[in-house]
Length: 580
Image (cartoon, helix red, strand yellow):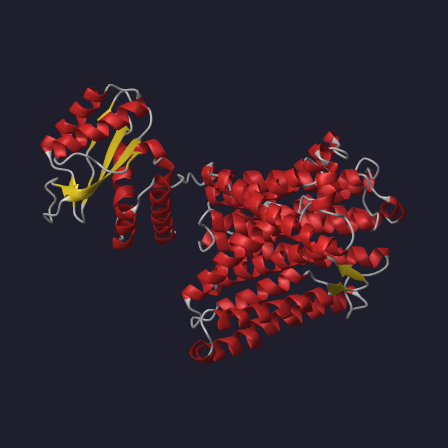
């Protein structure tokens, strides 16, 4: 048995805890992958998993099952909350490791404008509403007694950004290392630091700063924060850079180096939690300081990134929605007002701030929607305020709704505003019917006929029509490529979307390739006649996916559609990394 304070973590608690983690991780991964396929940020699916598994859905459909998996008190509950906090802390370490300081310095001025403007507008509007209409804004018992604290809290809660969610969204959109991504992240960092300092003032107004074991006033809290950030960016940064070659020479890889990095990050997180600023800020600043060292191998960064973002991040985001019953306290008028103030104010402020920072209109609009993403920070603040009875349940649910709406629309709207086309992935175009595991054909003519037969079943276009169009194109110029690949293709007026049929030949088929080698992978490409660029896109997609000898070997070795899909997914991921 494991002793946890005065409680005992018995076998039943262990069973509950392990099942709960499995449900959170599995549910968030499934929904996250679905969102990725639909072009949405994976974080939205991870958040939805928490809603489905939490009080809102599972708790209403099967209350006893929910209470068993996710108890609201006791040792298992305490351990779960600790795991969720640890997950958030490690997620911000990853975000910090990805930051390039040189880029952050270049966007500094614009980031300040964006941070200040995107905070000022919603802060002023929310504070005014809370001051003049406390009942409508659902002030709690303490909020009624101390209206200034309630008004200040409303301003902070509806103007603070969701740093973990913004970081995850930028990573999902392959924008994290861009100048625009760095500007958004820099503005979000400044916004949240100011927000937590303002919340410290709220705590001072109602009787104390939570978790601030070293401070008796707000001024000391700010001083400690500044001292920590300066020390991290100088002493910690230089020390780690100096010691990194020694660690990589004498410690095991990647375990030894990763252990040191995680140790430093957790110590920094503990310190910022101790002084009254949330632990995730300490982890993020530690990540920035550590990641600035060019001695840190890219493979080490990637290993940390994959481990944390695929295991801990889903647990954190799914855990947000567990103990929230949205339907019980959903107040539509309040939700609409809060959403308008929070989202509208942030978008307008972000846009104006970016324009003041000399950015173009389209980029400014994208930045406005990016900084409008709220979530974990607002929820953390809301939970603290709810526990103190500074706000009521209706206001807390409104904050939750704002978090989910802004997290869901941010990524797609940014892509639309920037007119970014979602990069096609070969795996999305290759369903099981699109794969011929072993071609019978021994000639190019026979191979085209065999593949068009399969395409006819998919498109419901007569096979002889497809065969005639593809063979006509093949006679004009051979479609054999180097490295044992051929791409016979045609454009047809009858099609409304592109089609790929992939066939594998064990002995190889002569498609008159420039290197003289027979084709073992034959990809039939059929595209709409009106889509002039579609054919070029698919040709580039095939060339990119089959560029690696290892990928080609894995595809040739595939003995089932599942094995093929695994190889194609790896090819797509490598192509995305190269393009990003």
